[in-house]
Image (tube, rainbow, N blue to C red; front, side):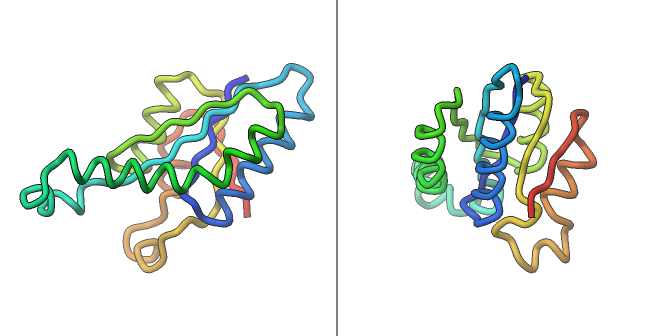
Length: 141
């Protein structure tokens, strides 16, 4: 079984990782966990004209690495086979596309991430992932 866990540095995404570990330990055949962190680079397109595309991408990758850091120790201590992926692009579409390309069996993510007012106006990432995904999506509170 292949499980994709979407993380964004929020408390609920950390809970999602912990739940994925618990689930993985309960399964007879141990799954592989892949953590994905996605940053939408679209809002920074204008800034790219001034500081350069590479600098913006490096900044977003560095931010992703910081957001993944709290989960690294937990996963390393768990003994569960895992990997980390950093993507840039539209968040929900990137998660779903990666899940489809990688033929993941399950997506686990926090029910509420770092966004606030954008959830009300645009609809949440979790709503879009759960409606676009072909595989089951498990939301953790």
